[in-house]
Image (cartoon, rainbow, N blue to C red; front, side):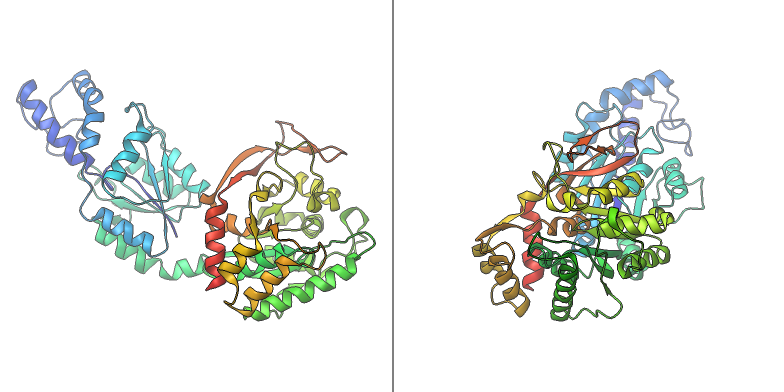
Length: 480
């Protein structure tokens, strides 16, 4: 589960510190004391200060106060427990609001000093009540812990589950799902979401030309060994061929048998799960029935959301969209293909095999993430020696993967290769291992180069991956 957590009044004792300092300053100012025990807020109506007196004191001192905040009781302990339980922790704070000289450094230093663990820190502007909702939607946050009434309302209206942390100043609204301390937060999340976490697995379809190279076998095994993340709905066979060597029909049959072999090793039930795909490329397709395309459409229409992990020519995906364009609202495609924007062309295998299919998917406006090969996935290079160190002897599957890596039967014996295809699986396992850029969907020139048009719809493009993190996860899962 992805858990979003505010800082001030949720992790840090913001209000308590502010009240203590305001009482202290009131004695220096005019020593009137608290004139309203039930104010709208400590900064608004509790003391008989003018607006200018309050704003001046706050602006001059808030950065100093923030450095002295203490964590709420047991907050670091229970955040660590949530992390240990397998959740992802997103600290989402409204501190990017002009109150601090360097809000990022101030916040990261404070979190570090108090041993508060997290996966990602996000700073928004607290005066923009929509900002946190936008970040929660962007990162697929499952539950947000927040104290601000206006922000809670916006989060709920955006369809995000919210636990409202009780404070002295947010009691006027009584319709929220409230929590009062971190023990309660932990217990609520652990009990109420246990079943939901199980059902939160991502529905995925793997579209693969698995017999073409050895990296597909690694990708399929990696997917099936990540059962905590994925509900594997189908494995579809993408077309490939090598001139004067292997036809699409032959490649499809070999790929189908290869999928069955690896699934059997991993005890994955293949009945009604593995489907042969197109035996022609998109521009030559004659509209005959295609098991893979029909299954993609069936699964897409059945689920609220299905991820298609495409690690070959994108023909089957293009044909499915062409046959039933309504599925673009129910699928998200992550495709390994083409090269990075630093390259002058996209003459790589997945892209150049079926440029017409690439154009069709780009133009469809489906939600799309591109995993470029050159300069991005190409960083996933390893050697037979590293593989044998981590995997050899661990299982029959691991020994087979090492053997295929050394000699894949098509590209000959090689001591070092790139496991391109595992990048797409890893992207859905943990997006924190990747950096992406949102850009206007490019047109494709006849020479396969991109030309950009800022008026086009947006797509997501990966421009960096952390190969160390990915390989650590891959070796751990395959070696278990």
